[in-house]
Structure formats: C-alpha cells, structure tokens
Image (tube, rainbow, N blue to C red; front, top):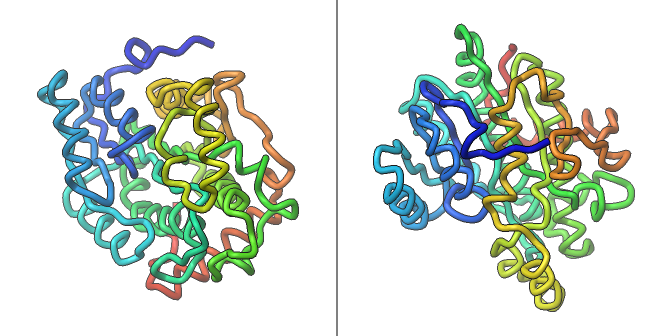
Amino acid sequence: MAFNPAHDIKDLSGKVILITGGNTGLGASKVKALAAHNPTCIYLCCRKIESGQAVVDSIHQTIPKANIQILQLDLSSFDSVKKCAADFNAKSDRLDLLFLNAGISATSPALSKEGYEQQFGVNHMGHALFAQLLMPKLLETQRQADSDVRIIVTSSIGGHRIAPRQGLVLDQMKTDGASIAPMVRYGHSKLANMLFARKLAQLYPSITTTSYHPGTVKTDIWGKAEGVRLLAFLVAPIVWATGVDSDTGVQTALWLATAEKGQIENGRYYAPKPFGKPKEGSKWAVDQKQTDELWEWTNEELAKHGGPDWPEE
C-alpha cells in the first residue's frame, strides 16, 4: 500500500489535534505533516516551551497560518499531566486526534516523581493519566455528528522483542528497576503501550485506538539513552546508516489517524511492513489476562493520585 501524507491526507478543517512530545523527532514530524492539511488547531505538548516554539517557528516559515498552540507537559509528573489536561480542556471544546507520542528509552535506574520506574512512569503511567483526563472531551467529540475520534499510541517493536520473557512485571514498577536491564525496561513500557491501546479499544469501541511501531528511525533517542552508553555508541551509527528519517517514521501513525475508518482494525498494533496491515506482536501483546492486569493495576495507582476514573462511553 502506497501512502503519501502530502497528498493522501484529506482536509482536516474542523479537527483539533493534540500531540505529546511534539517538539522533536517523530512528534515534530507529526505536527509538521498535519499542519499542512488545515486543522483547526494542533496542540503541541512538551516539557520545554522554547523547544516547542522552535518547531512552530520552523513550520510557520512554510505554513504561516498554521494554528499551533504549545502546552507544557512533563509526563514524569502527575501534577504536570493534570495541569496540561486542565489547560487543554479549558481552551478547546473538542479533541479529534490524540497522539500519545512522547517517550524515553534505556535510561539509568531512576524513579518518576510519583515513584514509578522512570521509563514506565513516562511512557505508560503519565500517558494513562493524560488519556483518562482527556477521555470526557474525546467522548463528547465522538458524540457529535460526523466525528471520527482516534487515539494513536507510539509503541515499538521492543514491546514484543525485548520485553521481559514473562510479560508484565508490575511488581517491580514501583522500584527504580535496577535489577532489569535498561532496554528490557524500555520494552516493558512499550508492551504496556500496546496493551493499554488494546484495552481502550475494548472499553471505548466508538473511538478508534491503535498502537504502532515507527520502524528504525534516525532520532536522538539513542543519544539520550544514558543507561546503555556503550550499546548506544555501537548501535547509533548502524541506526543512522540503515534507519529512516522521522518524516518517514511517522507515516504509519499518520495513516492510522487519517485513513478511512473501515480500513483500520480497532485495538490492533501496526508496523511499517507490511504497511496498513495489523501485526500480532508477541503472545503477551494480545494476552487478555495481561491486558486486564495492566488496566486494573494502572487504575488502582491513578486513583491513589487523584485520578478521576474512566467515564462511561
């Protein structure tokens, strides 16, 4: 299947889009590609406002009328997640496309502000709370005539290639994870992304929720992988020699966000090859027991920190 975002994405007039981690790499490429198709507004969420502004300034050089708003978001802090969601909900009366895109990889053992293993805290827990706080807006939008609300979760092949052999190890996610290799902790967080998307699709079938692997992409994520400095030093040249640029890496996500709804299987995991076709991943990525276990564990933890619970569809 051939897909060219410049030509194949339809006019997005009336659509409101939110992208976490929109200031760099895959996130910035998503903002740039979608801005070219006339959405009502794109909300770019990132930790550093100035880095988000640099992306906006660059886009405005070629698309001067693009309406892009920047919201501060630190996914390692539930307080920041709550504030960002509140700011968005106050500014916008709808949300059509939600990209849970931001992430970190192979970090040294550390805890998020609420005491979760850092990669799990950022890649899964922060996004889970964010989605919970935005779900009323997503459902409100979906109830409107001709709406087609979608959630696209950035996962990785690591979610089934390098996650723990037994699947989820939630009993270790309230430690710094020092006993687990950095890349395995990353794979664990990416498995959680797949399972989270799967459960959202089951609970909210009117909203199309998918997860995807972008492929081997030339981004700076390896440069930030302080937990595996030697491996990063060895692997980064290979990635830069064989990988694709971020504009290519986002094509699967852009297709999932904009293709005809009937072409997409809700709750499934996608990868660049074969393009437009869902993949199974590992046995854990489609395991209903682990899907439910993650959902229940996550919600118990969110409730301890003032999470509002999930609304009914």
